[in-house]
Length: 185
Image (cartoon, rainbow, N blue to C red; front, top):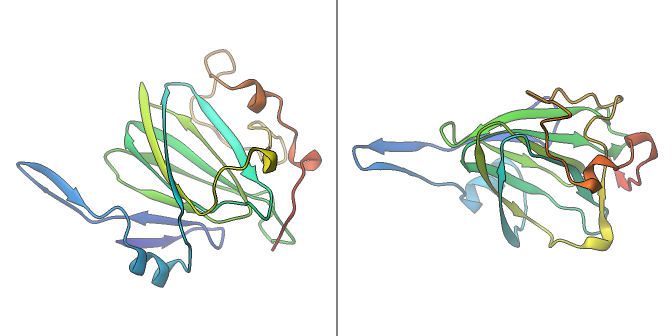
């Protein structure tokens, strides 16, 4: 696998080696020893999967400490714009984001460490999105920031207020300046 550092320390793009032939393909999607020697110690405890249709925007979600989550995300069907926003107080990149297009054909993965909000926008007719997390979902610790926060200014692709599908929770999430954030850099 190829581990690519991003402009925000701790966020990684991971490109697996894909072996293709007339039968299809094979790839290792995760190899713990290799992951830890490149990214660091992470103990994933749960795998999640979602299926969404074109125009769905999920996010920007996070869980407060001590139940914050690191995530390793990828798309197995379709195409998404994946976004990670730095919420670590004191970080030189606080409020900055990384975005990466993840597709079933590029096989790229994004590692999002603890202390980041995460979201994605579906660009294909349908997308199946899978991710590993290092803490279970804890509803009492779940928080969100607005997808259209003017201070973060995420450049969503093909975003159209009328055509995009957002949950009520995401549509009404607070702006970063008003959000509860307890991550320290």
